Image 1: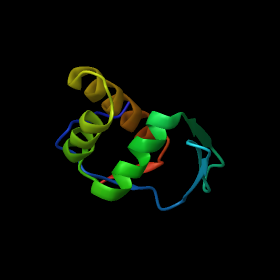
Image 2: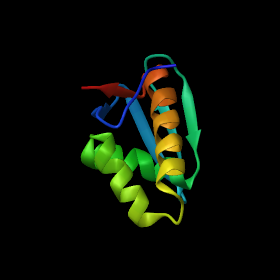
Image 3: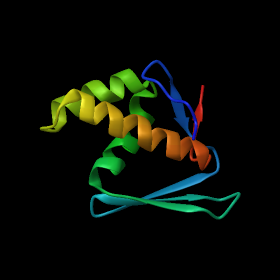
Length: 93
């Protein structure tokens, strides 16, 4: 799995298609045909990556929006972004 930290900045993959389906999302990598389904929190993380890029800023927004501990949100964020990076759905800048 990709090594990811809060200091990293990501962009959405160039060959991806994102569809929001009533708060949940499906992302398709056009090059490989791989698709990735996300729940509402994962969908929000995707949207925040598109807005901020820098994971520290994404975490700050998540902490304001969700009633969960910062450590838990950070763990979930880094784990999801590592999985997205491995699938080439996001790219580290």
